[in-house]
Length: 323
Ligand SMILES: [Zn+2]
Image (cartoon, rainbow, N blue to C red; front, side, top):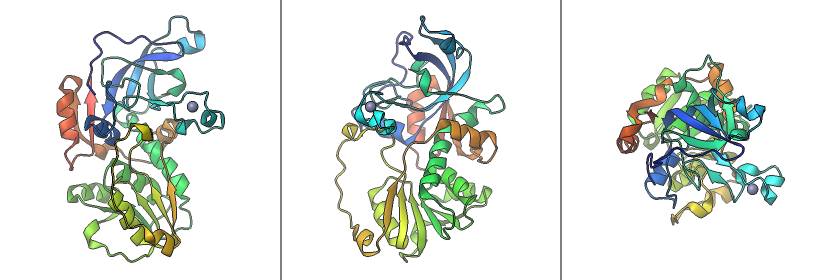
C-alpha cells in the first residue's frame, strides 16, 4: 500500500466524481491496511472531507451540479447487482470495493475518485476538521441505534480510541450511567471534558453486572472480557474490528477464547458496523458531539509516512492529513 502513488490525476468513470481532499483522518482500518493485515496494494485513505473538482465529461446536469461542492462520503462501493445488494443489504456486499482499503485507491492523494452516489454535501456552518469525522460519528449513531439503549441502566464502553470516545458522547445522552473502560490514562482527560465517567480496565472486576457492554477495541480478548462484565441476559455489542474490509481481505488471526459465558449467562451478542455519513453530519451540525478533542496531530500529505507512524502511537486518537 502506498501514499499518493498516483502519478497522473485519476479519471472519473461514469457516475463518479473527482475529489480534492481537504482533510483525511487516519483511521484504525487505514493503519491495519498499512500494517499488512489486508492484501490491499493501492493508495490508502478511507475517510475524507473534500471538494468535487469534476465529474465524468458526459454526465448530466444533476451530476454536474456537484462540481465545487464540499463533500464527505461513504467509503463502501457495493456492486449493486448481487443477491445481498438486491435485498437491501448492500453494506454487506461481498463484491464491494472500499475506498483506500480494498480494490479502490484512497484519499491520501492530490485527487481521487468516488461514486457520486456515495457523496453527502457538507453544511456551510461545519468546519473541515469536524466534517472529516462524519463517518465516525455516523457509525457511533448507528451503533447506538443497534444497541437500543433506552431503559438500560448500566452501560460500559470498552476501549479508549476515537470510536469509543465519540460513542460515549452519543450514548451518554441516552443513558446517564455510561462509562468508558480504557487503558490509556492520557485519554481519560478527554472523557472528563465531556463529563463521561471512566476507569482503567484493570480496576474493574468481572462482576456480571452491566446491562450493555459495547466492545470497540477489536481485540479478541476484550470480547471475552465483555462477556464477563455483562449481566445474565444482558447485551454485548461488538463495534471494533476489521472495519469495512471484507473477510476475504483479512489475514488469519487465530486465538483461543473462552466464550462460555455467552451460553452460561445467556448473553445476546450483536454486531454494529458502518453507518451514515449524513447522520454523522447532522449530529455534528447540531453540535451534539464534540470531536475537536480527537485531533492529536496534523501532518501534510507530503509527510504521509510520518503521519502513519504518528497515528500508530497508542496515545494518539486521530492524525489529520492536510494537502
Ligand atoms: Zn453486491
